[in-house]
Image (tube, rainbow, N blue to C red; front, side):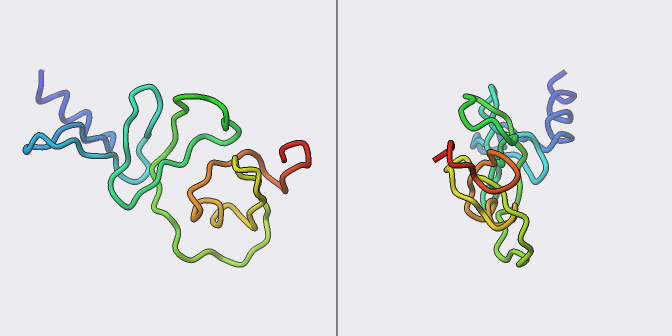
Length: 108
């Protein structure tokens, strides 16, 4: 039974406890945070579901934090009420997404 459980965890990209007893994180594309409070591997960031800024325990997906972003202007509004030039720039700042487009005055 334990073996099947471990295989299930590995197949979903989630590893709970390693051989040393250390808690490990989820890999790229795996579900993170949420009620289970699953953390991403080192050097990954949990990008929460869009438009859930004030929702506690919202789940997301583990992504690699972008280092270089294209200079394509497709603005998005972050949960910090800042307008980012595109979604890549928002992810590089590790800020959750509030909405597509520029932030509205009512958000500020």
